[in-house]
Length: 620
Image (tube, helix red, strand yellow):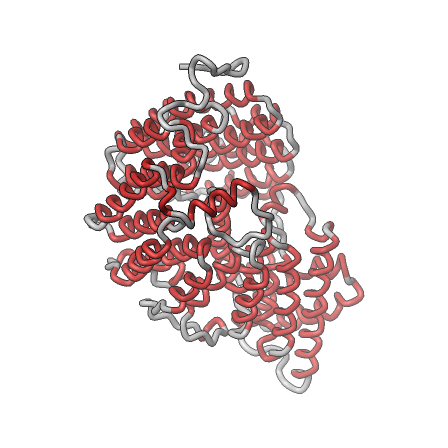
């Protein structure tokens, strides 16, 4: 069950990233994406221009020519993954103006994924097929390219998806699936999650097709992803999944374990202290699932009354842990049916060793803060001591005692882990305050966050919250403060990523400062070494993922800069010395020129002589 939860969590993360990426891409003007809104006058003008290539301006023709040149230059990259990403971005940018050419480029890039040579260290050997597939470079690239294509032509994306022949030798029989190509199914469900709001009918068809392969963790993760965009659709499909599960009584226990994750509290529920049963819609879905569990357990007890009540210790441990986690829902929502579940737990316990039973119960039981501290202080093992102090710090945080949580975190001997736990506590506390629209309280907590990424994240959120309230001066001060902190960072990759994000928010309301901060970001990119660092031999609780060029968001900032001054933005993009990074920035500039009818060529929209900075804005 633990492995199942980890798998579902990793799938939810993948789907969340897909949703995040698609949300950013959908904001671009002029894209052909599924939509139910009434076209505006500007939309009609863009549509007319898209269908009338002769009306392209000289600059737009130049942009198309430049993108074609970049596509050819990308072929010289030795790194196949970078080449494919760049070519896909170019095809995405030109789709509205040269669809035939874009289709050809997408197809070429997608087929090239099969030719990627994977080194032995890039292949994740894992007994679970989901982990093996999701960890492969080919899967990640296919998912990225399919997501982009699906925004233009869902059917085209589906055609390419159906052509996938997974190179992974994975056995899916162990997870109750009958799919001939597991990877095809995974990509199909991922696409479904990204279009839950805009194309619910097609999403329903995809999920129902997935249900034909049985109930499994990928399906549940997809439903959780759909729920973020379209709760009503997700709950409806979950009800259909319950009907499928009821029709397969022999897989009852496995289906309970897979479907249970849909009703468990989300990370947001835990962070903000929300009770999932407080939402009437979620409560109804939970009760529906509990009744399914009750009927399944009741039928199992009846069917096995003449035989051994349980078969197999491994199955007993899995079922015990699932029912143990579901039990509180029964006690709260339908207590009159809780006794049958407790009886089943007792039967399962009889088939589990005392040692395993103790371990399962301790995993589901919240250890007290004082017990964790006592065990940490008495431990002679440095690693175990750090683990216990980390758990104690988070336990104190859950009790809303931030000062105690930070004091406990300071006892962690490993510096990287100490900084990670401290930053996480301050970050989550600031996020809670910001969720209550208390910017002052959030600032008090965020100003001391030691790790750059977490500090920039919160400061950026605070600034955007203030901008929504038209408090531009305070927003500018916050961004300038975190910019100064980023400039002092000794990690050029982290600095570059942070400055690009700060510049993007600045550019939304102050194009001059947007250009200034972007110039600093470009310098950091040129000075940075993006090669993965040599892995440390120190054993750490938390692994920090190094920043790569693919993680830099050129699209957001360079599209905004292009709206203010196309020529200056293009020159700035071309000044990036790392070829792949420069290409991604240039693509963003050209895309904006092609898709935005309000481009100001060669002149900053808010010029120096007319621009009136809000009070308190810092200028370099």
